[in-house]
Structures are given as structure tokens and as C-alpha cells.
Length: 355
Image (cartoon, rainbow, N blue to C red; front, side):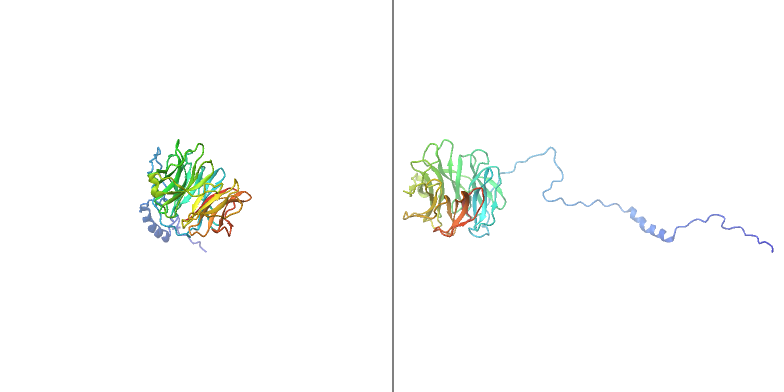
């Protein structure tokens, strides 16, 4: 059989590879994207209060002196809390507790001493004496809603025992200017117009005037003051209407030995709470101003700093009756229904009621 001749291989040259149609179409769709300009990165808002860029060198602009604007009345229970001096560590601080002993709160944590806390009539600020300047004691305000501290007096002497007038427009306090006798002073609630009202007595080496309390009607001030023996006090009443005439305050206590510097008015203005007795064995007494009748309310425990609640239903005071541990207690105005409301190994003292 004759051999067939092979035809020339028409595919002798290598066949070119072609891209699949679907790849070409996809490329045409993607190509325009490369010509779209790139968008700048989105900027996130800075957190409130954060400075993004520092200034070099750092600059300091003094802030204006703080101002104090009275706040509305609090919405809490009327007279539901007690503010007091609480010794914590090496310093005296300011604490607060509910009348049933719950909610104990330490308000200040400074490495200085704070004494004599007292609430304003609206209960929005605390006034107290403090040696924040590490020298003399001055008066400060602490705004409870913001924790802002405002200095009211500045090195006018050693000041203590501040108290608001019932209207809240004035503040009384005891002041011992250098080289002068201890006296009763009054100033406006913003710290202005501080002036001497009663000059007290001159007695070398001691403060003859140790505390003052404003009557509920704002017309009279009760003073604890020495007569002829150091550290032995009697209670006097100063009529503010006659204070400018340099009238002497009227002595109202006689025969009650060992009166301390603690004095407080009843809400009715007819009675005073006092502390008196032998050293380290003080008791609380109720003194009726019109009749002079004195009633003993406690027996034993070394008690002091008694104050009526705003409604007159309770009396708060500090006592050492718990194994010589200074704690706060409540009782009824007749001395019944005794209740302990703080229990701390460190002293709790100088209670004052929330208005």
C-alpha cells in the first residue's frame, strides 16, 4: 500500500495564548477606580477637655478669683444629715452621716486641719475654719455640688466657730487678731465687710471667748466666755440691736460648774443646750432662758457639743461613753431614746445638723 504523504503541519508555529474574555471584561470595570482621587482620612472628634497640641514653652494664665452664687434648696430630707469634724490620721477632716448612721462620707482629705463645720441655711455650702495657709486659721466655704473651696478670710487673725445668720446673709465667728483680745466678729456671707462686734475680755494666755451661736430669730447671740477663771466658762446673751452701742452681753448662767465652750439654741429660741460637769465627766444640760431652769439630759460618758435637729425632735452630741472612743449619738430632747450613729476608732465630734 502506498504511503500517504503527510501534509505540512499548519500548526508548526506555536499558537499564541489568549486571555479569557471574562478577565478582559473585569479589567475594564476595575480600571476607572485607579483614577478616583484618594479621600483624606476622617478626623475623629477630640474628647472634651483634651488638648491635642502642646504649647512650648508652657504658658500660665491666672484664673480670676472664684465667685460664690447660692444654689437652690437641696431636695434631700429636711435635717436628714449631720456634718461633723472627724479626726483621720494626723489631721482633722470634715465628714457627714445620715441621721440613722448610714451613708458615712468623708468630705475632705487634705493634709491640713479643718474644724467647726457648719452648713448654710439652704444646706448648699459648708463653712469651716482651716489652716490651709499653714499659719493662722481662716474661714473657707466648700460648695457641696462642685467640691469648690473658697477662702473667705485671709490672715485677719485666728478665726473659728463660724455660724450663719438664719437669713444666710451674715456669718459670725470668733477671731483672735495678733496682739488683741479675742472678739466676736461678723461679716457678709461672701467674706466682705468683716468687723468686730464685741471685743471680749482681756485675759493673758487664754481665749476668754470660745464660741458663739446665733438665735433662730437672728436678734441675739449666745456666747461662752470666761469670767474670772481661765477655762471656766459662763453663757452670755448679746443683743445685736445694742451691740453698736457697746452694750455688755448679759450673763445668764450661775452655779453650773464646769461649763464648756459648747452652746446651741433650740429651734424655738427659748432654750440653750450646754455641756458642764467635772473634768472628763461632762454631761448635757438644757437651760430655759426665761425661767433659768436647768435640766440634766445625760448621765456619764463625757458628753459635749449638743445641738438640736431643725425640727427640735432630736439632739446630736459627741460622747466618750464607748470605751473612751469619741463617737456621735442621738437622743430625744428629754434625754430618752439614746442611739449611737458613728463607731470609728478615731474621734468623731462637733456635730451640726443639715438645715
